[in-house]
Length: 620
Image 1 (cartoon, one colour):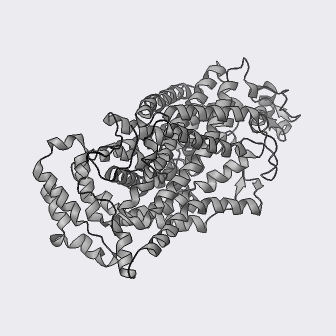
Image 2 (tube, one colour):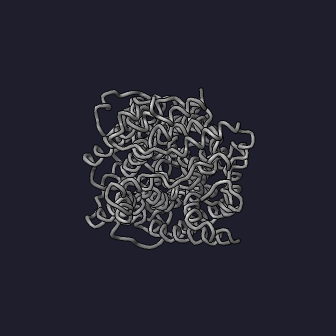
Image 3 (cartoon, helix red, strand yellow):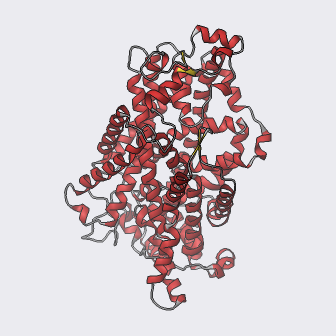
């Protein structure tokens, strides 16, 4: 069954949009999509870097002010419009550029995310060797400065001040930088393709393709395994980690609050970026997954539960990671700061170091890197499903014919695989760092979130949309969400966006390599390539509108979505009271648009608000 963005819902002769076979499919798909690698390596590092337990203060604040309201907003827009991200914003035509922007970010994210999955596969296969390749020197990739981490002579040197090893490089670091990446001196030196990584990248895209090639029904079955099995493995690693000698030192370091760090602006920016990144906001995924819900579905409940799950996994993964780091620090007689790494180094340097000190290192290595691969895999194929849905929504009749969708999906995967080749060269890690820092950066997400909230609250009409939300979930959610959409979240995202630009730091890799100017220019072009579509499309839409400026403004702010038959698409509509349907249709037909002149009446003049009156009848 084709996933089609319906023009007239529920009318005979029209192909209906796919819906989840079971209600739980939505929750599993969202959980698989946004619980990923960022929860495992990014959150624990940012937590200890920014004051330990003190970091949780801005983190929780931004979950409440930013991620939860935007999360529920994106899901609600998809559920209401029954369209993927590319067409969902027809409810506010002037900001349809949001649909283009989020899909561009999603494309970039899928390209470099697949490379990280290829790294995980590379380590997974390497862990099957009789001897872990990063646990020895004397290999082809090792230099004369190599030393074996955990060797007796290294421990003795630590006890006497580490003077003998200050200029030496761990075998684990050399395996990562020389054996896996073959890292060159800079982005200007592309070097050769790392063929092992290329094969792992190809295998990654092959798995992604066959996870989603049969549509959302097939994807919802695959995600049962890919969303739950990694969490079980994380629990196994957590139990193993906290039983190690020195584990509590790592946990204390992870959680010990340093309230002085809250005075640092960068702490707040890191918290905001982590929240938006880990919740998969502004990538079109949540809107697309929400569009497969039936119109009458309690997505509000699921969003609350999934938010707790996402942040909970981040928090628990910190225990699993830092328990092992505490063990490793005590084993070597060094401070935890000397063994903790940032970004991918936490997964591909620090943890492999710890594996060399554990019994049965091959087993734990396979377990850990298979967990990393599965955590990223479901995020990858849910993101790819979102992209494919955009093409299907744009040309629904074209994709109704057999095998066209499967062929288009193969072509899409191929283009992203070809783009990813630039990241598996010897200079590829510098390219990936640009994509991570700019193409799908925090300020892009803040920019888009601001316009999403403004479009729904101040153009479509906060009261009208809130009544639709109440109608969809079956009751009135906590009103804080409504006022977050209209006031709190727009203010928070705009302030953070401006602050992040003001405090922007030069692009570096490992704080030692500074990118040349031409590469920084490319990085900014990548960032602008998504954000620019929102103002550009608004200008274009105004230019092609007819009439004087007032008539044009009315046209581009009036919803193109006819929701008068919105409830007829649900199977449950046959059991809906006829009077309720009549009231819903009446409420939908009035569709008032609010302008800046109507702000006060939007909140205070409820007696003259037909939407308010009808909603009170529905949910009294």
